[in-house]
Every structure is written in structure tokens, then in C-alpha cells.
Length: 309
Image (cartoon, rainbow, N blue to C red):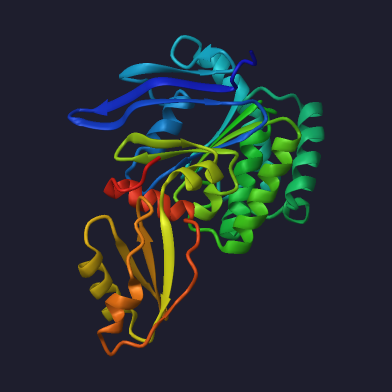
């Protein structure tokens, strides 16, 4: 049986009376991307801090490449790269100088640093900016530099806490292309995100809700297992139509106005007669064919307790 790159069992962290993470259990295969997904305050950052040894668990345990995060913290640190939400770049240092500084923390020698810096600058596309101060970089470029600093000691496991938060869509796409290149090279990535389109790029995800894992698995499997059916109702009066549909269909239904349409989420295969509900009104509408749910749909319905996963 292959040793998991990352393993958590009953991982729990309390801050006084607040249970930020409760009994998280999951395994991450080597050479894969595992997403820790949820809204703000769901426990994502706490989970990453526990895996990176920044925090110690109140209960349960975590292992990185077989090393316990509490019993063998230095072995864990040597083998992991951790990029926090507010990564500590030095704005008055250049890209090159930031890399050199973080290499020094990990005791990377000069010859190794030259080779690794050249490789990191090339694959990140940051080569033309190596002499630019970090404070003059764009948001997306700062995130790339932070990633390079987390990789400078060639870790086997990369832990990323919402690395693209606040970054523009093009920079987010470029960042994820880099992550997939790293995984193709054999690295394991654990990444937290509140962006559901990013979660779809992961091999497996854990959906967090109020500090607990509500569901875990491959995104496609979670969508298929949710039991949700989605309709889109095109109408010039989406708010009025959404209110009426929610009232008539009742418990378990979610009607969301989106532009010129209503996105209708229905659990457990219940298919109401939408035409009959709206037909008695003066609201013009067109009902599109039913579709499968997105991961965003699944997470929103899990929060309400109306999805099956």
C-alpha cells in the first residue's frame, strides 16, 4: 500500500470555546492536488497551519510523508513548502534577493541556489523581473514570487493557503498552470480555496462547513452523488420569479436570481411543474433543460443540509 503524502486523522483545533477544526480525516496521494474548500471561517487556514506545524492540534494527528507534525516537526518542515495567505515577502528586496533570503533560511548552498533560482525564474516566467523590487510587483507576480520562495528548498509537499485570493483571473489561471506542472513533476499539493472553479481543478477535495468536513472526494463524484437537479428559468423578472418558485416549491428548494434568469436547485430528484407555477402569473419565462450541479451548488446545499453527499 502506497504511503500517503499527507494524512490527517481526527484533526481538531480549538481556540478557547471555538472549535475551528473538528475531527478532520483525509488522505492525500503522492503526486496529486488536494483541495480544502469552503467559505471564509470554515477552518481552511487552521487546517493548513496544522499541517505545516505552525499550530499544534488539540486532538487527532497529521503526518507528512510519514512524519508526525508534532513529534517530528523539523522533518516535516524540511519536506514541505508552506505559503500562507499573507506570505512574508520583503518589499524593499528584489525578486532575486527574496529568493536568496529564503534559501538562506533553509541552508541552501550558493551553487544549489543558482541552479534552483534559474529553474524557478524560468518556469514561473519571472526571469525578466529578477531585479525588480517585490513592492513594485503586481498582485499576481507577488504570488508567483511567494510560490518560488516556498519552493526554493525543493520540498516534496507544497501547502498553499488561498494562494490566489484577490488575484485577477488571468494570473489565477497562470498560477494553476504552474501547480499542474509541479504535480506532473511528482510534487504533492494541498491547496485551500474559496473559489469553486479552482476546486474543480483538484484531483480530490474536502468540503469544509463550520470546521467539519461535510464531504470528501473527486469533484465529479461529489457532483454526481449530491442528488441535485438544476433548472434555469429565463425571465425578464428573475427576482419576482425566484420568490414565487421558492414559496411554491418549499423546503429544500433554492431559487437564485442571476442576471436574466433564475437558477433553481432541487434536491433528491424532486421535479416540480415549473410551468404550472409560473403559468398562472403574468411573468414571461422559458425553462431550459435540466443540468447537473456545479461544485458551488453542492457546497451551498450542503450548508443547508439538502444535498446527499
